[in-house]
Length: 583
Image 1 (tube, one colour):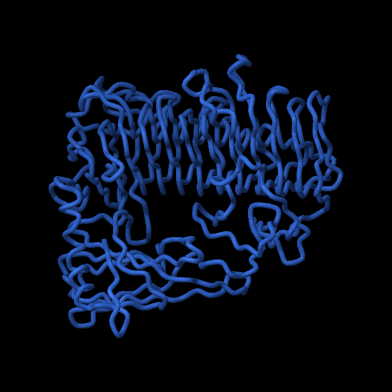
Image 2 (cartoon, helix red, strand yellow; image 1 turned 60 degrees about the vertical axis):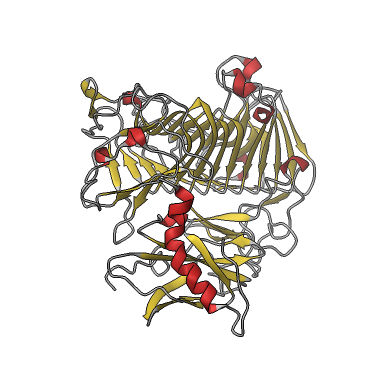
């Protein structure tokens, strides 16, 4: 733990020097026997299969380095991490930010691993014979480009050269508890992500899912999940492969939260239907689904004209959700030349609380309908295209206008052609929102926004809510990134400097309360576990007592903070985890 000690210049230099020198070693105490496997960097681990996956323990990390050619390997994770010491499988980017590519084509598996359902996925989290079967827990999979697990491709498994199943996934989660999928690309598979019902507490964060599906089939999707508690956030869902009729995000989970994503194309953007497992449909959280802060785009050629389906599709009506879909602060854009329907609520037992949304169609407003047929839809303070209708067919449910609705020809997007959907200063959506439903507090309020692509920033505020996924940038927010991060040796010290970004892209002022500086040493810590060095108000900081070592890497990261909300971690060109190797 870092303790700030005040002196004439605000810091006790001696105490800080001791701390900084010690942080490179402290993980050895905290992690016990934890091991980091450096795949593609350490000669002892030239391949993914050279890692002893069957003996990973809490706190272990597998770092897979980018290389020119893809890794053609697949594996199972059937081990136990802990909340304090998760098992981390992490990609290490290439010199231009490239993620390590894991291809399922002709992929091999470490002989010591033996597990069932090999044909269901490229990376499986779930049961195995070797290692001994368990329910995997506290697993983090991040920063990998996982692709090409589908027919007609095959792999080398325990039964020899074997074709993939037609429901294979880039990541197949059979079972597990407290699982995180972060910053991965899932592409060119039958399903991008598949999660089975015996899985609890999943976070899908900052991933990119596209080009999945099977030609001529409606049963494979960019993601297809059925978990007991799942959050999708800051993900970019793109179109499925050409000729594939699946949905973009299909979910049967209890405790489902879909927030701050960009979801474009698919048979439907959202297909939120029923589970046939009592562990889920008897869970009270099965009756409430939260969808907010998303950008949902319906192209002209994307199959079904419905944007969001909520309820069920099994025909076993007793298992349908029979609850409330809370749908708020989303921006929905349809470029269909024909009809667009916002919601299909499966029965009159399903309802939707719909408020503070922009729903814009490029066709005339008469092509926009609220309901397909059934259900109860309550509308507050939405912007809809003038001329919209309750239903294109026969309405068996009800649509209730509860006030604050705005009709118009254009919501006042910044640049519609460039898909820049934040409002201009003259938009009718400014300050036109209303309070959220009580069920949304305190966990599901709208404090963040999606940034293209699969990133985030704090939502600006002037005290009154705007309609849609984006708040007009009134100023006072925080920079989405810190730029120009540099590290310069100064004797036995390191000077860390960065550039403050105090205007947004519209030229409006931004403000920052403090910057958080993190640091780590490659010998003992992976970048995802770097430690807080200091909170500083300036754009420079001297890290004393750590002379650059050409044999080691020093990592630094800076995050801007406003009102306790963090911006994006510095990463990428001009703002990055600085590598001191060889300098």
